[in-house]
Length: 306
Image (cartoon, rainbow, N blue to C red; front, top):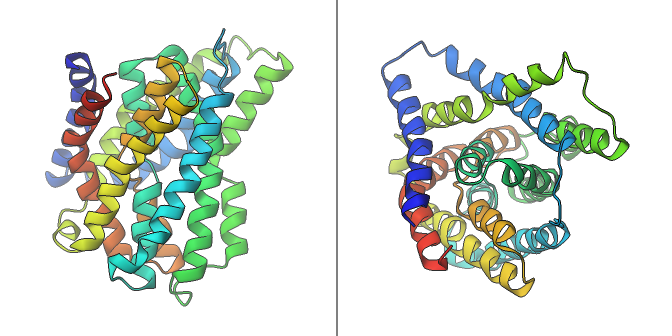
């Protein structure tokens, strides 16, 4: 348990540093959107390509872990829909609760798995990303298409096209293809990928902190509560139960639980704004969920005894 706390302290310290830098207007407001863009389009894809291209899982078979993750995604989504009558929210607000309950923050997850496991853990995390990102985006786009304010959003076709251009999905497919075909990354390029990839976790966590919206966190009430409880408590419990049902090994179980405990992704705010969801509520859920994760991550690991 103490090792878990020591591992996550740097993660949340980097988030806090990002928040402090943003509030201190250093190095300037123009920096943070560009840093976020660099992380999303350059640093993180480089890390995924490098890890997946060199992935050697040994005796580990990720099939069971991926199956448990896929079922958990579907069950979690169905649970949010089932609880909608209790939320007392309109359509756009429901889409933000939905995103808050099912999405995960990739940057925080990367930082956590790197600190806790590294090596094979990062590779398993990358394989899970390859499954989860397209699945989650399709779920969220369909929910927003059904319940969002279409007057503010783009078409479903445009969103699905955007999904096909997702740099993380492209990076995962490229890395898996290189590994499957036995193609070695050229000696002059491989170190570049490693150096770029090493910047993904720290820069991503700084931008998470800079993107927290404190004013939005004061609103939302019940909707924020539903999203945070479902994401930070129910979701990891569901993943832990499935890992036991599947008789997964300790590493796969830890990756799944870590996945479940991660706060909501800031991209939920962007998608809500694009497709007519309740963007202020989405921002509030991201902020409160990230703050609560300081407490819930070690608490969940303590409860499951990993």
